[in-house]
Image (cartoon, rainbow, N blue to C red):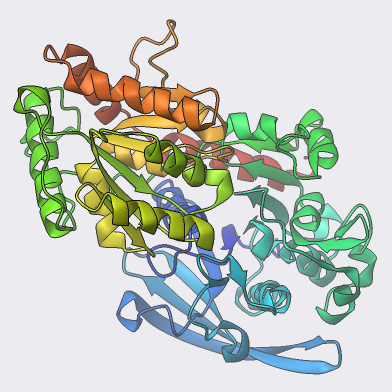
Length: 511
């Protein structure tokens, strides 16, 4: 009898809507839902963040015998609970109050100020996940996500054996290569992992401990979140020191780019309860090519949002309301928000409204707040994250900007398009795969502009280009951009089918 169940276990640090620090949480919360719809049995393993997860979002079902792991000479006990989300996704919660009963997932300021014990916290996640497999049932596939789950493949190999026949198939997904979980190598002795995995074919990287590197090299196959990003990270510019290992995986067919999706049930302008006005469309299908309805949707949501933020509604030539530029982002250098802000300081007449939501780098936060102070009649900078405000910005923004220098996939551009926004984005990673560039003569249905030169001049050029199209009295080009963008579908169905095939392949003995 096969000792493995037919389940796929996701292991990661976040899962929206229970706990979310970034795009990882969105994927962990939505991809399992669509895999389950395809008939795949999925469980999601996350830490039990009691201070973050609201009790009403969970249905606790069972508790299992506790486990123990020694970190150095110090034993730590942990609990295992099973639960179910409101939309029916089975959960395994790793309960360890010393490590997980915190205010944040990774640390304050969107993880910029990390908890000093994150190495041990996420080693605990790996040990807890594998212990749960032993007591609940060993899955056929373990799908680990990002550096915070990077120790799971090593713990699983130690528990079940290195040989493929003795253990579950191991899949590892890189959501952002810029975050690798790098720590002093001496700390490897204190996280309860067999030291044989401290090698160049495991976690050792130039004399340091690298969680992400070990996670991908100890797995059977590594995926990342867009085809272009999978290619980019094999180069020195985007590889963050791991391009050699990634190039070898890529050449062997063991590194695959699968474009992320969004939950079309959740991100829907027709039924979204968090926005001021919903899209009026009586058709059951989402396809809507009546620009008048989109213009009404945008106008009402823009007016309501500006009113809520105490920003006066400004008008340009012909009495047309000035466009609203929206930002929902981490304030990090790789997101290009600092360059975007610099470009805004260069505009004398400032012919648009701007609403920004995000947090991260303190200097970028302060620069955003300063711009809002000197342009307080046209700019609002909200530091932090507010889910309802994010929805309102997506619904109100005429132009949604993502000036990323590197972007593994990006979900915001997909959401903004679904809400009728036109995109200005860096020409990189998943942005290249999801935004159709109006400046490319070969593109039939453009949805925005891809910025080739990510500097102040490049961003200013893109904004000016879209501003002039928006304000054009004829308006046909703008109408076309909005219709094209709003009718894009970035659901999980296609990508979930690719993952389903990947799981079947990974289980096979010869893979």
